[in-house]
Amino acid sequence: MDANLNQLKLQINKSLGDASVVVKASCGVVCVLYVLTFIPPVWPALAVCPGFLIPPNFRIWSLITGGFLEYRIWNVVIDIIILVLCGKVIEPLWGALEFLKFVLILDVGTSLATSALCLFIYMATFTTDIWFLQFSGMTGIISGMLVAFKQISPDQELYKGMLNLRIKQLPSLVIILYTVLCLVGIVPIIQLPQMVSGILFAWVYLRFYQPRARGARGDLSEEFSCASFFPHQLQSPVRLVSNVVFNFMVKIGACSKPVRTYDVGAPSAITISLPGMDPADAERRRQRALKALNERLQKLDQAQSSWPSLDDQQDTEDPTDLTMEEVPTVIIDNNAQALNPEGQSSKATIPT
Image 1 (tube, rainbow, N blue to C red):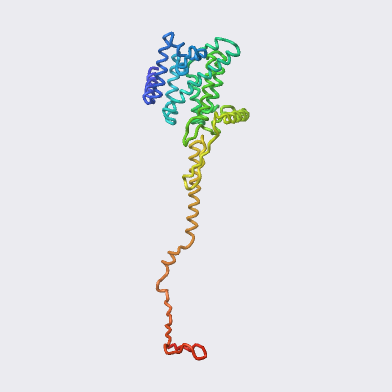
Image 2: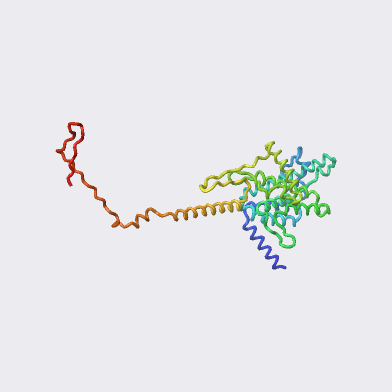
């Protein structure tokens, strides 16, 4: 048992040592805020409260601090493990700045969306407990990271057995799990909207707004559509509704239409690059096009080699076989008359 704990400590220390500055800073903030929660006035001042976001209190800072504020030690451990794991997988692909921006978007977006839901419930029921409900934690950030994993490697298997579990199925399974846990009472009910809003904000940002190569934005691939988060039986109606919503968002200017760029730099073929296209798929298409071009060039070389070469014919000719034709020399007698009296030409003498 002690050996396993020591091995776990070594793995955690090694992972934290290899982590970037963004991951280390995030883990440090989680630990510091957890220690500060032992001071009674700290947690109410740093947690998100919908009623305190508006004047006269105007606690805007809680939109950021609330996502990193935990008051249970096991939540702190889970947050650190997930941050380190995401830093290893996601940050090398996106960069430290983009990873930090994504975390902050999930943090602030989750707090705003959950507060808006509390406001809506308060306006419908006039329950002040909902309006002044305080919440915190990285539930929205963690659920949003699952969406990022779904985008990066959707078909990677997590469990092989009777039920093959893939990464692309994790967001849907987490929604079902949190719903059951909240209904049973194991998890606070406020964590369900936190988790759903984290998934929603992560998908919207990665789908439409994340900067990508060649000035494109978002991942518009079919594998990352809104319908892909639902079972196959529900994908058709969900796709219909999502297309209507997307067209409406395009009309009001909230989203932009898909941009197609054409790369004609290569002389062999025209490469069409779509935003959101999988780089591996694009590389396979490029290799297939190069293979077809090489086959055509080989066929052309074989066709040219079947014709006789003029240089080869000239090299095989024997110079002794060439015959010289003598041209007779014609000598005209200068004493001959040019014209006779009748206007006829005189005969010239040709010596033999």
